[in-house]
Amino acid sequence: MKITDIKLGMLRVPLKTPFKTALRTVNTIEDIIVMVETDTGHVGYGEAPATAVITGDIHGSIIEAIRTVIKPKLIGQDISDLNHIVRLIQGCIMKNYSAKAAVEIAVYDLFAQLYKAPLYKVLGGGVPKITTDITISVDYIDKMVADSLQAIDRGFETLKVKVGKDIGVDIERVKAIYAAVEGKALIRLDANQGWTAKEAVYALHKLEDAGVRLELVEQPVKAYDLEGLKYITERVHTPVMADESSFGPREVIDLIKMRAADIINIKLMKTGGIANAIKIADICSFYDMQCMIGCMLEGSVSVAAAVHVAVAKSDVITKIDLDGPSLCLFDPVKSSVKFHDADITIEDAPGLGITAIEGLEMLPGN
Ligand code: MG
Image 1 (cartoon, helix red, strand yellow):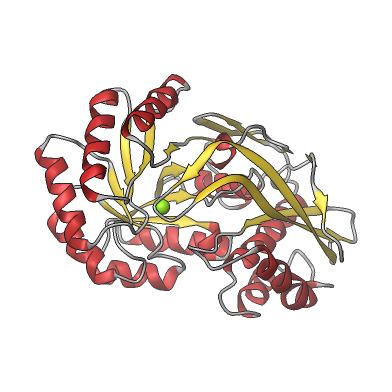
Image 2 (image 1 turned 180 degrees about the vertical axis):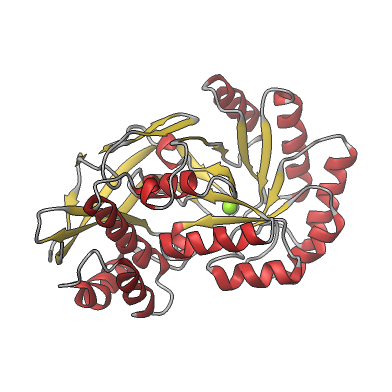
C-alpha cells in the first residue's frame, strides 16, 4: 500500500451555540480535511482546524505546509513503514503541528486499514467506549447556569466551564454553577490563560473556602508562564492541568521535572499527531500522572482519531474532553466512531472507519 497523492478539502459545520473562551468566539467549525490516497484504492482521512491564538496554525499555513513540504516527502512511501513515515512528517518542517497532525492521522488510518483492524486495536486495544464532558462557554452568569442545566438534561455528568475574563465575576460564575449542579455533575474549570498566577491562587482559595469542589483547573496562566503554573500548583488543593503550556513530549518532561502541573491535556493538534500523543501518555504513565485528551474546535474525523488514542491509552488518559462533534448542529462525517452526547463508542471497522463526509468542498489545486 503506497501513497500516491494527498488531496485537501474544507469542511464547514455550524455550531449549536457560539463557542466563547477568554481568547476567542467561534460560530462555525471550518476544518481542512486531508485525504491520503494509495495505489490499493484505500484512502486515509485526517483533519486540522485553524487555531491562530493557540497553535499559530491557520488554513493557509496548513494547506501550504502539506502541499509544498509534507506531501513531496510522502509520495511513494509504503504505509507498512509507519515509523519511518512518522519521522518524515515530524522532521520535515518546524512547528506546523496541526498540518502534521492532519497528515499523520490519515497515515495511521491507512496503517490500521492495512491490517484490517480498528485503529485502537492497532494501538494496543481497549474497551471501545468512553464518556466526554461538554464545554460551557463563558457568558453572563444566568446563561452559564442555564447552559449547565441543559447539558445535564442531555446526560453530561462533567462540565468544562470556561472562565478567565474578570476574576471577581469568574468566582461568582463558578459559585452559581456549582450551587445549581452540585451532586449532578463534576466541574472542570478552564481559564484559557486568562488569570495571573496570584489571581488564580486568590480565586481558587476563595472557591475552596466556599466549599466549591472542582475536579481540576486548566491553564490558569499564560502558556509561557511555567513558573506561574508551578506557583499555583504549590498553593492550591485543586489539581492544576497544563493545556497551552504543553505541546509535545519535551514540554511535558519539563512540566513534570518542575512539578508545575498535576495533569497534562493532550491534543493531537498540539502534539503534531498520534505518535507524540502516545509518547506523552507513556511518559505520564511512567510518572503516575494522569492525562486528559482534548480537541480544538474539530469535527469528527480528527476527534475520532483522538477517541481511538483515548481507548488504547485509557489507563493514563482518564479524562475525556472530546465535545467538538456534540457542539455541532449536525455531524456530516460517517465513521465507526459514534458520538451520542456524552457517550462515545467505536464500532468494528478498519482504521477510523470513515465512509462518507457530506458537504466536503474539495480545495482548488488538488
Ligand atoms: Mg483548554
